[in-house]
Figure (tube, rainbow, N blue to C red):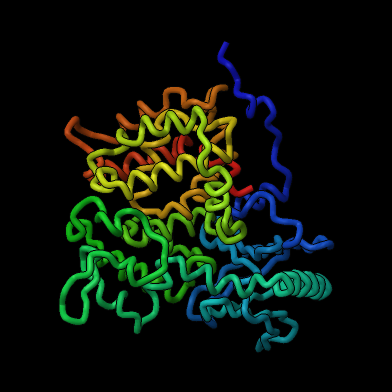
Length: 420
């Protein structure tokens, strides 16, 4: 008889609140100070309208799950969005041509305007407004509004969107930046503060022109300019189509973090990654010894892992997890998958990114009682490479590996609980 993991034996169906937070990719347990002494959770029928009627309107349900405001369309597929209350700059009552229609106007951090018609009875709409007002006041008193400004500077989408930004205007097809004298600056990190993967320094896998990086970047720029970005992104049907077209390498880490919801974990838990490393500086364990053995065997074909900077980045990420979750520590093939992620994602956002979806993954049973992956890595890696000559220098092979690992549930549990 197969051994059932401890997590599966102790598994309990999520509560209604937990299921809602999981659906909207929110942190599972909000901090008590963000929630406040009074339960402000509320749900109400509503119609979402973006940019004053320039976009289609969608009927659905509006959820107040402090410290977030969420909306999902009736079909639960077309439109879904989660917005931190701290990113809302203004809320006002909007006059509607028809009498008796209760409509709110929200102005988000990036200047995007959303109109929300509350289609429930007037007493219910008034009650929702009271709860929203109280939840917003809590965020204001905690100073969360001020934190948004510094946080969004770490996202590449903030560099990309402003029309007058020279880095966005002068970006070439291969992702390099053209300077005033026509030279190419291969290290744009010296000019900006946004977080990016090792590909920014050691180049991304594949030929940028064949991958049509420039075209993808323009399509995403247009969408992000009108539908928000990072903390305020609204997922409309066009967003799904753009994901199917593909993500540009330079924007890939930013979009992974945003679409998975892990950006909310990083926003609500600042300094967790650095704190783990600082608290355990100089300490060693069985996990750290195993990590050292595998560092030079982690995608050695990629230039970053032939350089001390890439190896040290991988070491710090793997070590941070092993100290945060000593019960699991370091397990088989973790170095390979983390190394693949680090091509596109910085070490700081990668911790909450790998935390997302932990409940789904534990149900798959890929982890045995010792924390090691059962037979998943071998099969997944073999499925990722279509021919014996494939390596991780082939971008399609690298992305196939990441896709297989994510959809089969092998990737997410390793950073379980890092930000809790």
